[in-house]
Length: 198
Image (tube, rainbow, N blue to C red; front, side, top):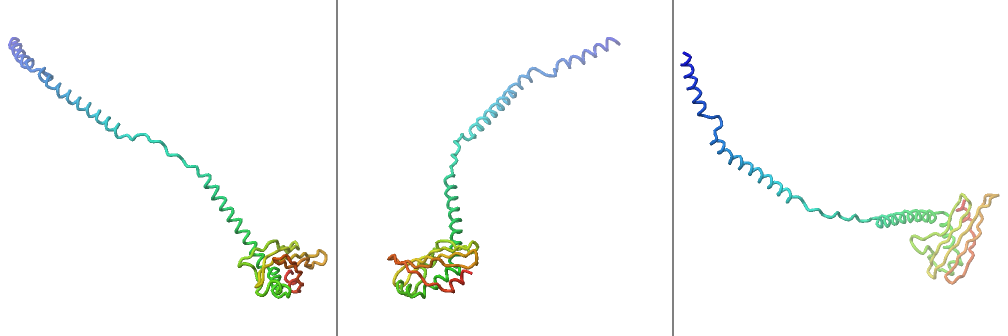
């Protein structure tokens, strides 16, 4: 019985030993496949690296930043000058429409000596005349000058008045017409002109 068991065990061992789990022929056949896959992976990685290197943009010099300081200074000067000009024009408009300036022009238009020297149609030299000087009723000082023209010639009017501190009454110290020839004509005072100062 023991002998029969040994014989059967030898029969079982022999077939197993004939068929190896990893035969040499199979290993030799698998090597080219592995090598080829490795080569494919290598070539693919190198191709990716080359494409990525080619796709990278070349470094370019940075653009120069322009210095706009001069432009800002110019715009600032223009803005400030426009603002100052608007303020000056508003003050001149107030002086032009004051009752004192309008009253002095009214007296000049009908003054006999002014009509003799300048002619008829006496008025300002321009539509927007410049009234030089100041009109300050609070401080009690009025001193202004403007140019006029008529049919015969041109001239300038100078008016000055102060308010007395004691009786609080206005006193006209100067109201003259100066022609282009340099002739200075004192103008007669009218009560309406004094009333315009009050």
